[in-house]
Length: 118
Image 1: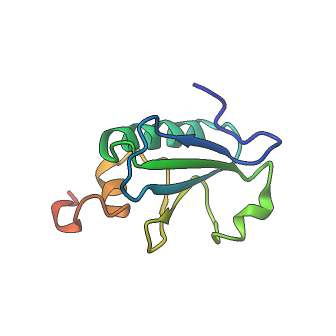
Image 2: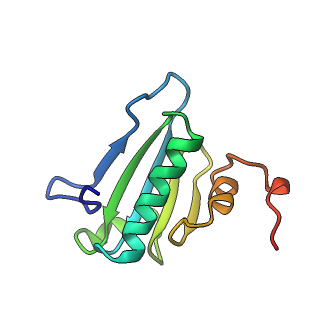
């Protein structure tokens, strides 16, 4: 897997190879270094986006160990945290994104009534 942390030029940006004309999802994933949880969150997010967004996404991975000041803008209190910047409204999901159904509901890709907690 490529380096999930940002480089000296800022956050790593991952775009779909098949970006469509529909409104894209702009997603920021805040992590703290190359921990197992951070790498899992990046991998899970890429998989979910490929399977459910059909090329309509851009992911920015922001490593708060490199740029802690970036946490203030999105009011990040825990990592990993996913922030959906577009389409509005802004949504946040905390965790390694391993629960696909929860992520889909959180991103408004699936109605909450379809998501049943056991």
